[in-house]
Length: 284
Image (cartoon, rainbow, N blue to C red; front, side, top):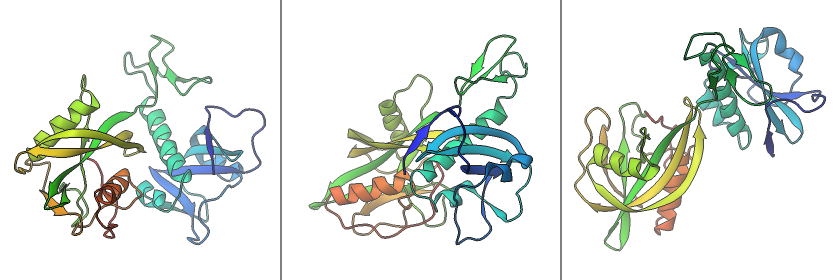
């Protein structure tokens, strides 16, 4: 399936639509778990909708984000992360987009400069203040992720860590938010030094992922260890250690970019396909 983003429908809307409907931040799915999410008549949700936004089209079928007062009969609420794990692309990405658009709309109903109620713009995804002209666009917060590796006895090891809020036993790559005035590469070096006390080199870009918890853009790298013993940052890192490629702890699934990053790096270093998985972790 192919997703084509848009701010407003072009021409007549489709008879049925992909409806990414939320109640109190939780995504609605059919009560019958065997059915799964599919296009439905928009009329099913509109009577309960407090806000709605057009997102684009998947294979020519309209996509809408809707914030509802309550779930209609026959629908159940599910946390977004759990719901997204059931989707493939592009549904996973569109569900995350829907959540971020609705949260942006909720958080910018009034101007952050003068407090005047803002107005939705029809030609772009924005809310503009009619009094002072300040315009608020959907927020995206850049965050880096880095998987540190080193050579050991003809093979390799990965530096994996866990924060206190991770699921029990789960380890992942290091991650942190980019600070004002900082490049992604500078953020990598700073966060690695702060969180585990080591120095790295040979940064290699891996990929990125939109992460709607609440509005991050994860940018992932690999980096080679240079020097330093692991010293976990108090309050941020519960545990961190080196793991051989063939003896990893529980790691996130491929649902998240961390799961892809760890597995692909292991294979690129000549290790076996990792099989240990766990629920995806949350960055901070």
